Length: 479
Picture 1 (cartoon, rainbow, N blue to C red):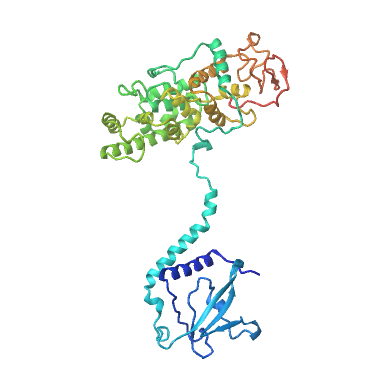
Picture 2 (cartoon, rainbow, N blue to C red):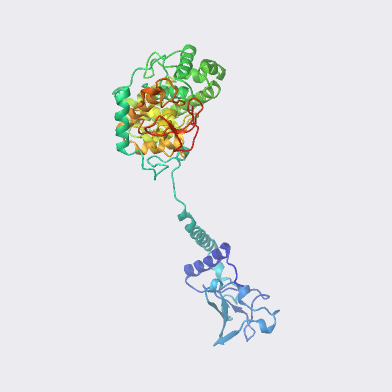
């Protein structure tokens, strides 16, 4: 059976080789009276370090072993040559046992290894051991692909469905043309309107923090309910009279208020328990970040963030003043790339890709295709995403790649309007729905699935008003 070579054994053998290379000479080793073999003349012998040699114990035959099992030795002049098999079929190792001269240092009781500064030898051995360990793990490290970690397991610019070729640019142009003929042409505004105190909206306000919280309140509820929640914050905590957040809620007052007060202010909007906790946590995080950025700007330092490097002096002073007055702000996100801004926003509790995408689209005015429940439903019916595999999150990542930038704003708005108003494309509808006979401008493009009004759950094929069986029935999510 071959001898098993472990990592520690490989390290020791490499260390022996390094020691020989460093000294470039053969070191004579003195052995004790009990363990040192004798030559034919009866004198003690030394075994020099040899790069092919194994341990001393394996190299020298024991007197306790039967004579037939001792390794054969050939005597050449004044030296004794012994052969030992190396592991892994590397061939024989030759060990030369030479007689010791009476005038040698070994015979005089001086240890030649100690003369070579043992501390340096130990350091050299340790360095070689570290290199050997690194080499042993090198192959496994090469197999690991270094990937930047992104929230939700999505990589910006990469579709989770790379083999799904739709929508094509032509598909997007056609859908935009047809829906515009029904709902009117949608053009992105050049400037962001002043914040409303009655409509929450989805981020169409100048302040990034204001946009983020308004979008948070509008999630998983109706527009009327989110407006009630926002109005409750206005009535409870007041509005800002000046600054970029003028006309919006005093978020620092919300931050310092008890959680119960925040809950009471937004409870009419639904989901107040979780939303009030997330709202408070977001404001606490923003406050700490504002103070940390303020300290870096005062010292003229940077933590590596691109928006802190080379910042204009006027912007620096404005941001410092906002922090000194406890005016909470996320407006520095304007200076980040779309990818960086997305990563920054989704780190806050309760903020997912849909909320962050809305802020990017409406407040930061970046091309971004946010996917809500209406958009997700229609895109499945259009076969723009794999109907049985996609979620709202993976659909966002796929459509962000496939839809041309110049159509993202208009298609986002048109799909939402159509999904809310079309008698055939609402969440739950059927042939008995009012207005069904009026038809749908994209009827020939879609295959409707999910629950139908009247209890039917079968698919309604493209271009047909009759129920069919083209696809397996599936209940729509997010209703």
